[in-house]
Amino acid sequence: MTSPPGNIEPSAAVKPLIREIVVVDGARYRVGWFDPPFLPPPAETTQALGICFTADSRIVLVTWNDTDWTLPGGTIEPGETLEQTLTREVFEEACARVRACGYIGCQRVEHLEDDRPAYYQTRFWARVELEPFEAAHEMTARMLVRPGEFLDTLFWGRESTAALILERGLRMEAERAGWGASVGRPEAAHG
Image 1 (tube, rainbow, N blue to C red):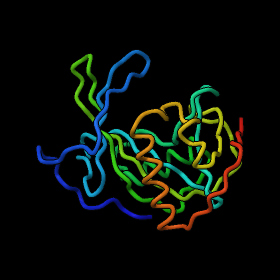
Image 2 (spheres, rainbow, N blue to C red):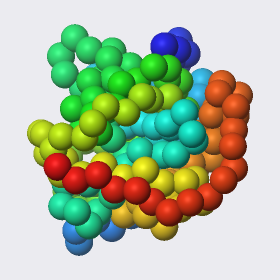
Image 3 (cartoon, rainbow, N blue to C red):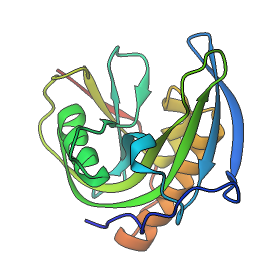
Image 4 (tube, rainbow, N blue to C red):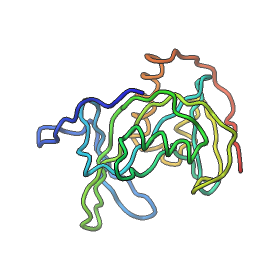
């Protein structure tokens, strides 16, 4: 697996590529996207998610409620690297084995309606191999979509960061694994 670049300390000089206000379940957040080589401070990083591609260039999405589809990934456990978190969470949530991954950026999340500290969420490209899906942990289903279906299927696909994640994931997919541009219908697997 590919490790993220060396830690670059955040400073006032590091500015996000984009910044937008996002509303989730009535709560307002400011989200800023940072491209590599910026890597957030580990103590302020809460999550590793992946735009995971299968060998036939489909993207893996998961759901906890059979309505809202998202990228697999989750919370960093003590002692884990970002790649270890991604690998564990993708297997737990999507029943998929990460065979390669690469850091594509992160987003900084600020709560606008309370005084909780800001935090970072990292994003990765990953090449995965699927295992039979079994609903476990919090996820109830897995879906495979073509890149052209990704933004319309992702429950937060209208956010600017979703388009950046897709673009960076496709770029890394092309650089690392080749690319086929066929478009098909999403396939869902339920447990």
